[in-house]
Length: 406
Image (cartoon, rainbow, N blue to C red; front, side, top):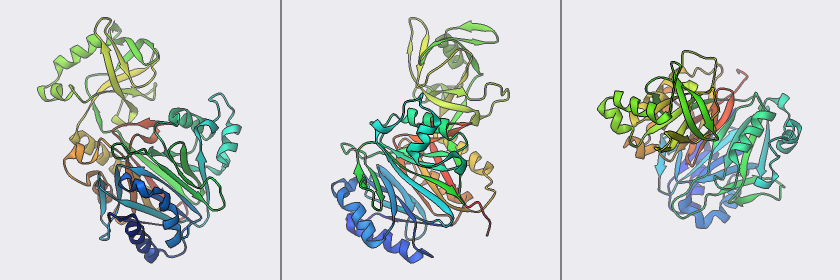
């Protein structure tokens, strides 16, 4: 297995395509099998020309991609760069012997109902669960019922990794997905749906999901809740309104954390109900959407049910950096890494760190000399525990690994 990446920041699309395809062609040991690209919406007026331009210079039978407000890739010095709010094209090409590749384009209306059998989902995706496929997903954030899609894939492929991101764009430009498969009439570009790859055989994807938060206070248990509204919490068998507990927590914080909580307070939902010693990776981080002072309720960005445990969290640059570094330290691939895809939130990058290339350089400091491609997303897709979720403010990394050792 061999992966390579090239990045161009040339303002002309044709010049950018020429630069990345020539760089990749010069480094390929054999013809590429698939291409995954991420393109700045600064080139939006030239999108109809993009796939033909790439294929003219680098024939690939399978090609998927999406637009992004920020693009991640390797410059000519083989340094990983995060290009935010400027023209950029990043192309990742893989030579994948002994890997079965199933590309797909899913229209929103083609998704089965959530009560459909696993067989229906497997027919739609064109791959059997026995093949143990790994999924790379690029979705439009506005047209696709992404949570339903992820729930359906988890139902049909419970042992499979699903990773990816939602397309993004600069202000006023619609997000765009790209799909090409030789002799498939659906090849082209779209402003809705999901494109992706199901990869099985001599390949595995390890995931890092850095949510960038730290817990504060102690865990609570949901006593009463409706849909996404928490009406009552308990701690040490004392039931009170969530707002009462939150006010008590705020009074116990240091001044710096109290100021941070004004704009960066989140709720972490415990994923393993039986685990007692909780670590940062045991939480699914969700937005705190609002409070109702009259009844003391709080609303969060997920459904709740009685019995669930939760803990309030804070997010800042230092916590985000420490979280990602901890997960990178813990990641110990069992076979050689060949490349990585990075799906980073629009709220990270220089907006969070006030310095360029922070997350990508941290990745390559632990895994040097692997090609990296990616983009800044409107939402990031990755697993927490045994389920796959749509995240925000998160850095999701797909580590591409060859199963066999040669």
